[in-house]
Length: 348
Ligand code: ADP
Ligand code: MG
Image 1: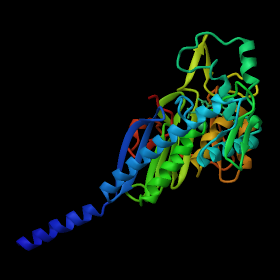
Image 2: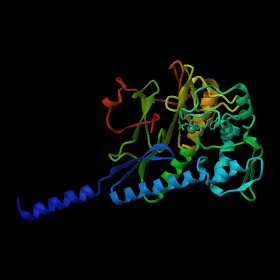
Image 3: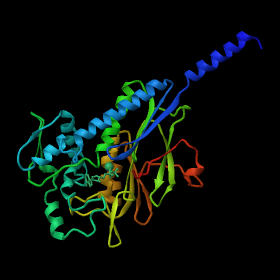
Image 4: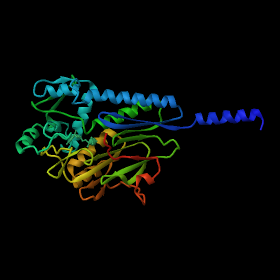
């Protein structure tokens, strides 16, 4: 082999490896949850730059919507409940307006003012006894999305009654995932995944040019998947009661609250929503949990381009009309290829 041929060969391999798409992935804790951010690109520097920009964006959003951070605009709205309207950034105003639309759509099953009960239902292990019926009645009387008054002229938000409180636990991660993808895309990343601990948003293709393979976790056993689907640009969002819950007197209470009763909902183990928008998927997964199997599926079947499947307390699976999941013969994750992205919730 002569020397110039070898150099040419080396040049060729380095050129071709440069042009090769690769997945770059970072796992970290954001918004109190485990985030996995993946950028597929032939430009490694750009991929990491975009992942960092996504992290910055999610961190920025958390500062706006967090109800734990005393300095957030959301905390200010909550502090001034029953006192005065609070002028907020258009971003937060618009998010609240969209949340109210989902409340309308779901007949109040989804309600960001659920948060007035978060003093009596804490899912950090501090609640050992059931709250009394009076305590629940007190808190639930404050839940009503129609009392979140939006003024479109000055972008102010007013919680009409003292003791009201809003929280974005059921929509914030989906919104953040949408924004993260937008930022990465605007930087030229044509494919990737933002996985906000079970709120998963994909776009483009895998590095090898195939569609993304998304595994759906089995609520009974997280190392198993129920099935999988291939997607291009899609959000696949799962709400489950198998990660965040409290056990009191041998009974499991989930972190999703029925706004009509003030009690945690019963009946379902997990709900997965599939549609192109992560924020909407996030909110609808929580909504279907509250609505229950029949009413929840009936709602999803009315909505074009949105699919759903759920697992009830008896481990029975139900699907919306147009959903087709694929199945493996043996559902063990370890035996499947590494391109599988597990949608189930993960503990931090
Ligand atoms: P996860 O945080 O596990 O992804 P969800 O997206 O289903 O779960 O959101 C559940 C969270 O939403 C709860 O922890 C709480 O913060 C909030 N939430 C509970 N009940 C409701 C409700 N009826 N409407 C809106 N938000 C709710
Ligand atoms: Mg949700």
